[in-house]
Structures are given as C-alpha cells and as structure tokens.
Length: 544
Figure 1 (cartoon, rainbow, N blue to C red):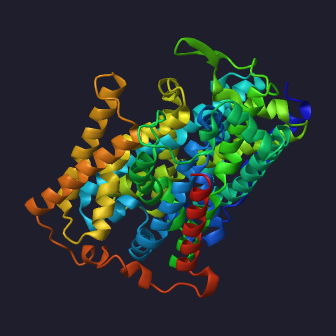
Figure 2: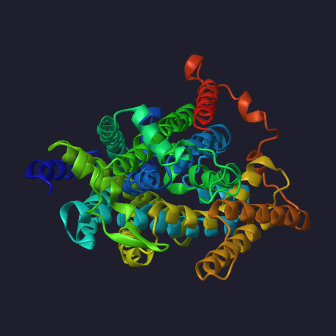
Figure 3: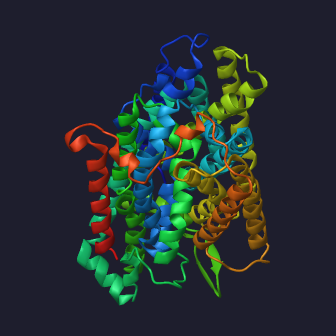
C-alpha cells in the first residue's frame, strides 16, 4: 500500500514540472517565433542537450522493461544501452556537421536537400507515425501498467491524466519548455534509479552473494553481455554487432524525436559535445536499470523477494509470475516510506519526458514538412498553431493504439521489434547519402518505399507465423543489407545529378570529419569520443 507521504510527493512533483514547463516561455504566445517554439531559438548548450537526449530516450518503459529483462535474462539487454554510446559518437562525428551547417529544422528537410522532395515526404510520414507508436503509445502503456500496479487506478484513467498534464506544457511552451523539464527529469530519473539500485544491492549483500546464488542456479551467464552464436535469447554477439547499428543509427542519428535537441544547439561544438555527453550517460543504465532486475532475481531465488503479488502467466508447461511488474514490486518491498514517492517521481519523469519530446518533434514535422508545403506563405503564428494542433491530435491517436500494443509479453522487446522493421531503409539512405557521392535521389526514393514495404510484409508474416523464426536483430540486418544492395543497383540505373546544395552534403573521405577543429583540450570532441570508446571496450571486456 502506498503511503500518503509518497502520494503527496508524487503529486507535488507533477505540479512542479507542469509549473516549470508553463513558466519557461518568456514571450507572449501570440508573438513567439517558429524558430523559438520548435528549436528553442537554436541557443541550447551541451549539458542541456546531453541530458535532454537521454531523457527523450529513457522513458518509464525503459525503467520497467529493462528491470524485467534483468530479471528474465540478466544483463544481456544492456547491449541496447552501451551500443547507443557508439551510435551517439557516429551522430556527433558524421551527421551533426551536415545537420547544423545546412540549417535544417527537420531531418526530412535534410533528405530533401540531399535527395529530393519525395524522400522528405516519406520520412516525415514515417517519423510522425513512429513517434506516435514508439515514443508515445508504448510509453503510455508502460506508465499505465506501473501506476495501476502501484495505486490500483484504472490504467486508462492514469494515462489520460498524465497525457493531459504533459500535453499542456509541451503544446504551450515548445522545445525550450521540453528541454528544461527534460533536464530536471533526467536528474530525478537517474537519482531514483540509483536509490533502487543501492537498496537492492544492500539487500543482496554485495558481489559475492550475487555470484554465489547465480553459480548455484547454474546461471553465471546472466552476468555476460556477449552471448554465443545461436543463443536462445536471439541476442548473440553477432546479432548485437550487426543488428544494433541498423536500429541505433536510425534511432539516434535519423529520428526527429531524438535529434531535434541537437538541431537546437547554439553551434556545432555544443551539438557534438552534447551528443557525446549523452553517450557517457548511456553507460549508466546497465547498472541502474538492468542490474536491479538481476538483483531482484537473486533476491527471489534466495527467498527474500515475494512475488506472490504478481499475476501468473503461462510459460511453456508451467505457470510463472509475470515479470512485467517486477520493478514496482521492488519499489514497494525494498524502499522505506518517502523514498517510494521519489521513485514514483522518477518513473513519472521518464514517462513525461519521452512523451513531451515526441509531441514536440511531431509538431515540428507537421508544421515544417506538411503544413508549410501546402501553405508556403504561412506566418510564424500559423506554423506554431499548426504544430500545437498536430501534437494534440497525435496525443489522442496514441491513446487509441494502447489496446493493440498491450499484446506484447515484453514491452522492451515489442518496441525494438517494431523498430527493427522500420529502421533498415531509413538507416540505409542516410548512410549512403553522407558517405557515397553516387547515391542518387531516385535510388533513395525507391529504397525508402520498397524497403518500408518489405519491412511491413516481414513484420506481418512474422506475427501470423507464416515466416521463418529469425531474431529481430538479425532480421533488421538482413533487411538493411537488402536495402543497401537495392540502392546501389538503383544508383547505377538512375545516376546521381547533384545540385549545388547536395554536392556539399556528403563526406569526400572517411577521415574528413576528423579534420574539423573543435574545442581545445579535453573538451575536444575527438578526445571525448576516444575516451568513450575506451571505456566501452573495458566494460565489454569485463562483462564478456
């Protein structure tokens, strides 16, 4: 039972975030410019960018589902967090220079500058759809499950309230309100995760009791991040190192919801450093989101954690506890009164920041890439109004999708399964666009169309059981390889005809990005990237 103190802390936190979000906009709402509303006046500095990138990525879904994956399979799903650091380095080194210099407001705008209008239209449509499904609906679902478990409130009632509160300050305040609240929410989220990790670690008794229980159970591989080829999890080392870049490059380098924070940077150096700073923060979730789930498993096996409060589900021939609720169970059983409210605030932080970021990106895409196309003479006031209306509509649509998405056993696997079928053609055209001079507009256009159609067909046949049982990470790689082959062939069938603008939007050599001077000393983006890669190598060696 949640105490009155904890409920009070949660309510006060909600009111604080909404108040800050509404207070941030300094200009009158009828005079705010579209640049100020959608991109915070392009005046964001690296600490805020890094924290906002992290908050836009980590939602309530991640806290709940990563803990669930830690309970079910150990640290393995932490690969999604550590590999993100690698793709954030790619964002900083190879993508951000073109994004900032071309002065784009949206990533579809970049595709038009590099390829053609058809590519822009398609990416705008897919980006809005993916933001509604992946960033909002799945987050709502995870948040609703948690709040229903903790408070006994109907899932749709609690989600509706959070949607209303988040929508108010996001739709009114624009990107500046989103980024400032995301910065606060990142700190609260990390703090809350550290608290649950500390208490569960203390309850287990440290490293030796942890490894003792795992060795007795014959499950020391739960500490391994690198699994052999053919591993039952579907996340063998080859699946991770071939499949994740396909998902990660789309998510971190070509998805408007994420990259929009970098587009609002004060300059190129702030954008680069912000992205790399986020890469350093992404090393933490394995220890503060995934590890608590593994600790919960150890506590369960040692008889310390009572799972009787969880519903039972069928797994093979046995009935087992539904591990979706393991995070909330840990909160209620391991934390003292008062701190439960802090953890609930952390969960709400993850939920609200993800939704706020997605709504802002949807409003930006709808205004610049759709509304402005049909109304080229639209004023700033018209663009802001169109953005606000599109965000409100997206919020309603995401709520209507919840019953359909609630069918996944693991929400984290569900979201990555969807991404695996969306990402390949987009990753392909962005990579070829910036690294290959001969990538033509028609080849990119057809690759986006046919690659997306192939992804839909494979996804549907897989859900109907008509296709081969291929792990989603490897399926992402196979789809990407097919898209890459298709674009190469089509680029020779439809040779590139560069415009003056597109001729400036690809790298002449792989070393060209590294020749760009940055800040001096330890703040240099090359030094920071090298340090991050070194830390990643050490971590993978320790948890191999």
